[in-house]
Length: 333
Ligand code: A2P
Image 1: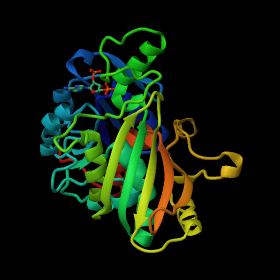
Image 2 (image 1 turned 135 degrees about the horizontal axis):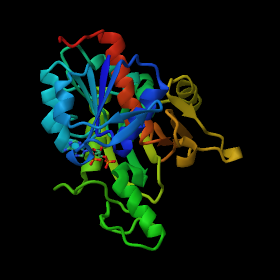
Image 3 (image 1 turned 90 degrees about the vertical axis):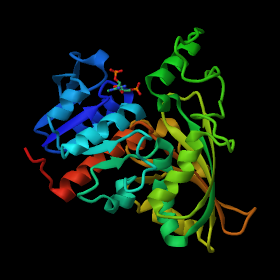
């Protein structure tokens, strides 16, 4: 099969190539594309050099699957052009997530939202993926009424720009093209994306909307997004209100048996998830599980996800794997 990575020079695009190389999709032809300025440059895949081409040329090659991480504008413009040719697009940007009829998928939870006619599949926001990986089994068991989530997001969530800003500021220099309106080094910025009229930010709105689209639920979600000076890994503090009484030990067992989730929760040994623990891992790490006695059926936990892996590249590649195995498609030539 032919697979294309669009935005292959970016932080997530490079990780997608790494994850594709680690796993066993039978790739006969790999196509790598990025913006005009990268055409002709080379990138490595399984030790072999591949030349970057334009997105237009990638469309003409009619790949079976195109995995996008090139920003929302490029996705809006090019995803339908690929789809018209029969290519299945897995899109990591926010461009298509809210559109009706476009599945928003975490394969462990709602892969069945995909069918042969859905040629564009949206990959959720990095913080949403970690959150719903932990919430889905709890919601299935007890039903969730409301959550309050606060994120502690690393700078890699803002791509190379975010990493550069933190690097520069740590060296005492000012970044030329900063990702944030304030210094991030030795600071925390309670602001992700753009502010909306209601005072939430676009990043907060993503958590609110995407959680319910993925879980097919109607959970009340209150979200605050903050950027912290960690290079990688998004952490989230989550307060849950269940619809009925629950048992902490049962939740622990359920999560221990949930593929893709690792329980790291032993306060007596200072064991709880941290961004460094989750670094370069595909699993989502959950800890600090405890009853919240301030409300009836209240529960607290802490979840950490490598935002570039399961929060982006790994989830997208898993969607591609699902497409390959379940649809057994071929693009007409
Ligand atoms: P390029 O490196 O040529 O600019 P990041 O979010 O880490 O900065 O990565 C963004 C990725 O999206 C890069 O691979 C970048 O390519 C690519 N990209 C940005 N704009 C476009 C576009 N209009 N068409 C195709 N690729 C794009």
